[in-house]
Image (cartoon, rainbow, N blue to C red; front, side):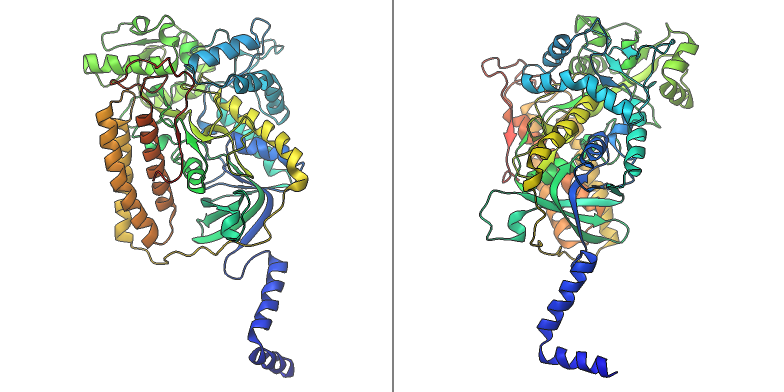
Length: 570
C-alpha cells in the first residue's frame, strides 16, 4: 500500500512525466502505441499471390517479412490461373520468338527492354518454382517438361500442371512460406491506406517515402499501424469492377487505388483484358475456360455451328485475346445469341479428363459433357495490363514503395497481354525487386517517428450498409455497359459523369461510418473505375484491348504513348 501511495503521490505532482515513462516502457516491451497497435517489420508485403509469396521467400534471407492479406492466404487471383507460365523450355523455341510474340500482342506499347528481361530469365524462374516444390506436367517418360501452346504464341512454350497451374504454384509457395521462420503471414488484415514520411513528420522536406500502411484487423475492427523499411504491393487486379469477370471476389483494385492516393502515377488502365471464354451458365459467373483448350485444337463456333474466328484473324481461334473477344462480341450482336460455343468434341473423353480434369469436372457439374457437347462461353473481364507505373524491378515513384505483378504497369504487356505471361511477370518482378533492394538494404530504416493514430467515426448504421451493395452493383453494371469490350466517347463521358457522383457518395460513407472492409473495397473500386474511364478518354485511338468506335484505328504517329493520371484528378 505504501508503494502504491508513493506512485500516486508522484503522479499527482508530475503526471505528464509518469505517463511518458509508462508510454516508453509499453512501446519498448510491446512495440505498440497505447492507442494504436504498431507492428514493425523489414518488409511489409500486401497480398498473398505469387508475386508476394515469391518476394517473401527470396527477401527472407535479408530480413523479417510480414505478409498481410485481407482474406485467407489462399484467396488470390493466382489460384484461379489455369493455363500456365510462358517460358522458352524447348530446343525448337527461342527467346527472340517469345519476345516477338509478346511485342506483337502488346500492339506497340510494350517496353522491349522489360520484355527481354522477363523472357530471358523465365527458365530460371521455372527452376526456382520447382525448387520450392511446384509440380509441373512432364512427358510420359518423365524426361521433358510438357509444354502446351496458347493464343498468339509461335511455339509450345506454356509450362503447366494439368489445367490448374495457378493453384499448384500457390499451394507450394504458401507451404514454403509457412515453414520459414523469417516470414509471418497475417490473415484477415486489410490495408486501408499507405503511410508516407510526411504524415509522421510534417516538417520532413525530403522526397516522398512510404513507411508502411494503416491496416484494418477484420477480426475486431481495430486499425493498426504497420511500419516497414520497404512496402511491397502485390494486391492483384481489379476484375470485380466489371459485372462479369474471371477474377476472385477480392480483385478490387486495392493496390492501384492506394498507390494513387499516396501520389504514385497510374497508367494505361483502359487496357483491361477481357478473356474470350468464361463459362456461360445461370449458376456460374466467373469460371474460366482456359485458352489451353484452344491451344489443344478447340474451335469457337457460333449459334449456327459455324467456325467464325477465321474471318477475324489468320490465327482463327488462337488469335490474340483482344481480337477473339471482339470477334465473339460481334457474333453475339449479329445473331442476338447470349453466347458462343467452344467445341472440343474431336478429342477422346479420356484425353479431356486427363488433360483438363478441373474444367471437365466443373462442366459436368453444370450438365455439360465436353466430349460430346459444346461449351457455352462469353468474354469477361480478366487481366489488368495497366496499373501503378514502375520499372522492371517494381520501383514506383514513391521511395520504398514497390509494386509487383498485376497491380504494376511495367511495359511488359503493353496494350494487350500475351497468354501466360502474367505468372511469369510475378516471378520475374519478385526476383528483380529483391535484387534491387539488396543494393539499398544498408540504408533502409524503419521510421523513427510514428504517424498519427487512425481516427474515424466509431458508429455504424446497419440499415445503410445495404446501400453499399447497391452502389457496388451500379459501378459494375456501368463499367460493363459503357467501358466494356467496345466503347464510344458518349458512353465513356456518361460513365465519367456518373462516377463523379458515385465518388462523392462513397466519400460521404467513408467519412461518416465506422471503417468496414465493404466500404474500403467500394472506395477502391470506385476510384479504380473512375481512373479507368479517364485513361480511356485520354486515348484518342483504338489500340490492343481498348477499342473506341469513334477512333477505330491506331494512331501510328504516336506509337508507344502511355496514358498517365496523377493524384488530384479525383
